[in-house]
Amino acid sequence: MFNEIIYTLLSMVKGSTQNTLERVFPQLKKENLHMSQQAFSKARQKIKWEAFEELFEASVEGSYNEDIKLWRGYRLMATDGTFLRLPSDAELLKYFGGLGNECKAATALASILYDLENDIVVDAKIAPIRENERALAKEHLEVLEKLESYKCGHKELVLYDRGYPSHDLIKTLSDKEIGYVMRVQKDFNRPQDREGKQDCWMALGKTGMEVRVVQIPLKSGEMEILATNLHEAEIEYEAFKELYNKRWGVETKYKELKQKLETENFSGRLVDNVKQDFYAMMTVANMVASFVRQANQKAKKSREGQGNKYEYQVNINHAIGIYKDQWIRVIIEDDEVARRHLMKELIRNMERRVVPIRPNREVVRKAQARSGKFHHNHKSNC
Image: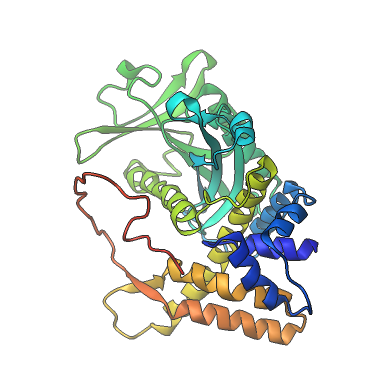
């Protein structure tokens, strides 16, 4: 029954537990195999949440068996955190902590290390909200060092927003010889020493560590200030605006995780259930991304020489729906030839659902009286 529980949790994308069970179990092709929601809830308690964490780690290593896209010779990543709303339960509130009125809304802190160019969640953590994001960021680096692909013919570069700069994290990154770019506050270090300088090196506080500080004027009139250990010979001043803008990819990934995969739609009310669901969805995110990469390659190749105005990419919402409906048939197939055929069919179905990529597109934000939980542009995949 271990495999069946795993399959069910990896299929629980936008669906109730009972509906998922009724969809998954008939595909397992075993006679008289069925399960109620209550039996499923009892059975999953026998599986440690760490099993799903290991499954997620396997999805990372598997993703890096494919071709890796680099940015100027760097594996380009970003770290960011977010709050996850949890079911209203006393045990979850006690373990994870709470926000809102009287801090009674159970909430967890999530943090990911995300490969921006390859769409891979490299590491993921879920923790009580009292945990420090910088501490989780250091844990991400420890995981990064253990990857088989770590510095394997390339360099590592991580982007951080204004919540992360600290002497301790900068020293850790420097000691590990990992490149970083961090947006910092206006009063970072000694503001008077960089006045009038777009690009300069400074000694960091009492530590004396040398950091490069880059100042970029934005259209809004605000000055974007970045700290980095990348030398001028590696990255020129003019490239930093484009480079740091790539950090937006991790925000987009969180939107996908929350709105399309519904990571906050937890299927259990125990601490272990929450951790099971969290790592199951991180695994699903990497699996879907792997299928989408292959489908995008085929979609691009099939349109070469057609004179299309735009390039096209797979519609991620449809891709999640296709994964949900077809992936179990692939994973349980024992015959290798049949399995490959099913895999090609799954990818081909994703390839058919594409949308145009419109570069440099800007959308003016309109003030609204209220905002809905699910935006029109982020529809359900089923």
